Length: 281
Image 1: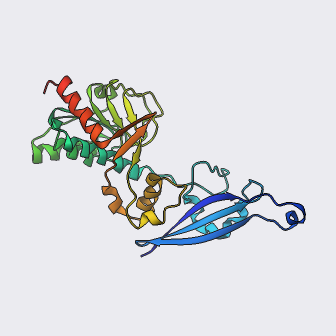
Image 2: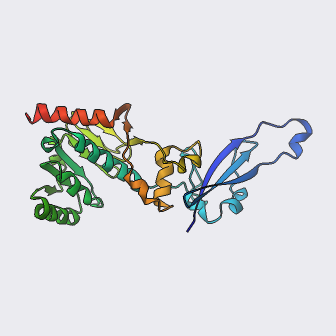
Image 3: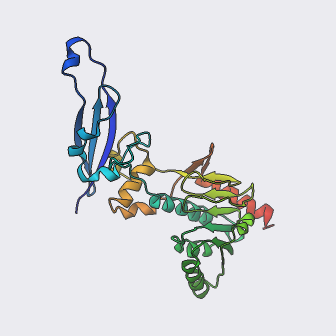
């Protein structure tokens, strides 16, 4: 089955002079690119005056107008029916994958205190993955049932226990905090903590906060990625709209946020140092 995704961009045309102004009009160009069961329809609006007439896009975009792949600099009118595609599902996987991979490389991972901040309880499988390596794990959530079930299974299979709570204050002692959703409430985190999440926090969070992830787009898809879309956003669409779930196994090599940047190796080193100094390993 072939999945069709639609990207949108705007290209400004040079201003016409003299009589050319009488016939020069905005127009829409369409091209197609294909890779691994995905067809990308590229819709480019050629603008002569800097404005976008959505009625000229209707035929080209069709039913995909509510999930267009485009830069966040394009703001569509509220009631136009046009929407930019946005999903945090893929970013949540990148966030979790980088955390788990960094912990797996730590020499003293058992001593690293890890917090999972997951208000919706959607990523409870992360608890088991972390408990395989770390002895001190706290899950803070408003939907405790999935995490309590994961904790029960971890106790049966691994003999490992975790604290499941709604108290955000419990994160204050954690060296690494994994937040696979947007942080919308203040977190009482340590200034030395590393926080991996999926978007800029909407509330105060101490420590080093990272939410943009760097990796190489897999072969095939790299050839069809529009140049104005970053790798994380484009692969998010492939994952969520194109059912390319194998992308969910990607481990980021870098993370950025709030003017900071770390690599997978530097994150691992940071956690090891915290384990040595704070927990006296």
